[in-house]
Length: 250
Image (cartoon, rainbow, N blue to C red; front, side):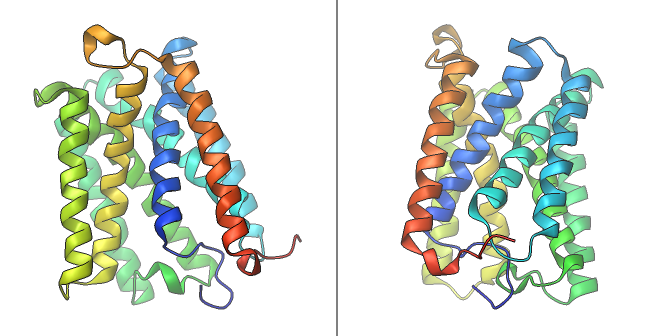
């Protein structure tokens, strides 16, 4: 971790928690919008508000706080889920059109970040401006992941499990490229970051959807509770593995 960085090191624990947080974001977002029948528009406003509150706390912090960081990741995932559903279903853009729009938006965010800061390396984020680009890219990528995951599960004919297997295969390709090629590690990071979101989205559907739709029928409440416990455990484990990297409380 670079001096002054408020972000975690990219380790095995990081990717496990990223997938867990994005899967929880999918189930928790569906819990609010569908199970509790709040609706996509109202849910989006509520969850975007939660995201902004957690983001302000993260931006104001002077060091790395694991629970604060992963709370922001989680709120981008829940907000991204309802924002994607609002675009794709309420506005009737469809999963493919929504995915295309979000791919273009993410590319614009990353390109602007590259032009303004000179680098998209997440291990050298030490300024407020660059951290804002980082969180904007994460919010858009998590929204994209929901749309892409829904497209693979519903429109592509692969189903929830098939979509998850396809994304897992693509993640394996990215991992192989990271270990055995000279491709840009920064680009591979963002490829993996984007892909873990639809993987989490499809896994969330596998856990929560009924058996006749290809899911395990845990429901949004049961799935969210289990995933929340797993995420908390892994955050605690990561803190024990690297206690020196956690900043003192403000």
